[in-house]
Amino acid sequence: MKADKNLWILVFVCIINSLGFGIIVPVLYSYGKTFGLTGTTLGILTASFSVAQFFATPVLGSLSDKWGRKPLLVISLAGTCISFLLFAEANSLWILFAARILDGITGGNVSVAQAMVADTATPKNRAKRFGILGSSFAFGFVIGPLVGGSFTALSPQAPFFFAAGISLIGTLCAAFLLKETNPTNKETRLNHNGKFKFTTLITTLKRPIIGTAVFIGFLLTMVQFTMIIGFQTFSVDILKITPVTMGLFLAGFGMCGIIMQLSVPFFIKTFSSKSLILLLSSILCFAAMFLSGFTSVFIPFAAYLCIYGLFNGLRNPMLNAIIADNIDQSEQGKILGINQSYASIGQTLGPITAGVAAAISIHSIFFLSSFYILVAFLLSFRLKSKE
Image (cartoon, rainbow, N blue to C red; front, side, top):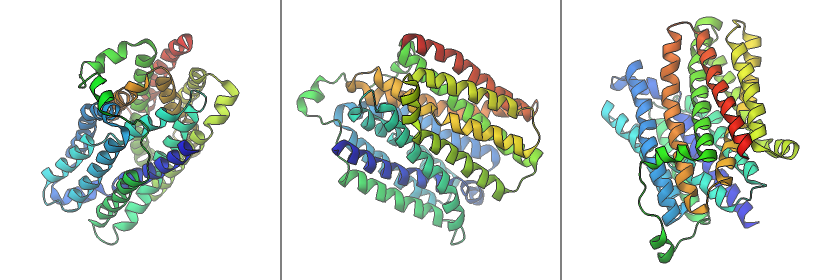
């Protein structure tokens, strides 16, 4: 019962945190233009967060193995709060970069939250709990842009002050309501393996099950962020839909993922094998993405993207559960942090490769995404054979 209470407090904290991030998405570019932000520097600004997170997340995860999850989660949430305040008080472009990099450096909230879930879960309910946690992050990303757009009516800085305020609430909730799931003492800290070594980023990929799951997650993250670029360009240049319609479509797309993540218990009960669920969801995502490249009409395009959004929602719960099932609790934070690191690189490389594909045609972006899914699908057979 206590574990369940802690899970729901953690869900609330994650909703608040992701809501804060989602709020600034639709306003960042227009706000940054007053400081000389361009389309090119926007890409660099976005990438700076992912690069900082790539190096920082496994370190924070490893520290949470040694010092406990709660203090590292509080530090991560506080860093996000400070970064939003820097955005609001910015008077130059370099402060925007400093704020984004700070948020990336303290961006261990995802992996630490996942480690807290893994600490108290069992193999039977682990995927379900990861699904609930994932849906909480997704909910904030869906609602956030709608809230952010509304607050711009007050002032350009208002969305950032509001995001900082709710991030502070999340920090206080984590500090005073969450229970530590990885209690440590002087003896356990002395027995800990020591400082995080960046060579672990490579050696982890060599581990048969864990490495395969991490690399599949990296590929499928690239798929999603490649697809987002394709969706934006396709919607504007081919479908000619308005920004309002695009926002509603993205909200619907996000809700598809939330519905599927909350349905994880049904899939686990029906198929029992996490890797089999991953295989089935991958082939359906591949078919939907591949067919998207052949259409220029809104209704079939929307149908294909909704199918992708639904079954892509099973990705993180299954992969995180597979990883957690095959690691010791003493390295939960470190390995889940490494998993998030590779996801950060996928978030960076996806848009870059989408830009290269766009030089051929907008439709080719969806074919590139389907190719990444196909590779992930083939690698999923390795997971199935090792399960």
